[in-house]
Length: 280
Image (cartoon, rainbow, N blue to C red; front, top):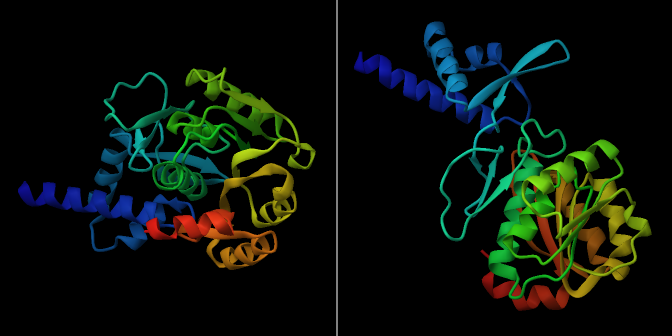
């Protein structure tokens, strides 16, 4: 009996590790194949337990059933950020924040590494790079609104969130209301080429072409001591983005990666020199 319990715990750990470190969605059959050292019934029981415990869920796409991490329960993203569906009771420490998102947020609910890394970069920026509360931030391609919500809850005074997808805007507004931030976050359908205001923080979770194009507008959008937080780039694309941004006097201050994805924080060279002593 004890051996069965031990095998179940280990099997569950290996299933979670497999899913968390896979760059692609995984089917249950692939789990059986990769964990061939366990008996089929042991894997089946471990999967059932993880589903029942809310750690995993089944999703159906393109005729295949996948096993994915569930975000329909509180999930810690960084040392200070927890994502949670509405109406979940759990305790937070003094310096922690909870970002409430509708279940199944389709535009950045934490399931994808780029969203998680962007939140980690925001947390790092507010804890290590920023001394005063930013007056104004912009979240370009806001999706679910999760990044703007996180930035405001960590200390930004107000945020402007943009997206070109009306469904994303609807979802972002719902999530912003869930977090009681309607008076601090504005959401609009507008392209960043048409924005004229200056911001202390620019946040963008976009693919490489969009992030490269964004560099053309730093002169108009970014305050002199401002920072740019980007995600959505493949690990092998980061070097190109660093080179592109250097053309505008913007240098890389911090970067991180998860699976095949990277994120980064950028700022003007004078800011980077001042912050070099606190880099991890």
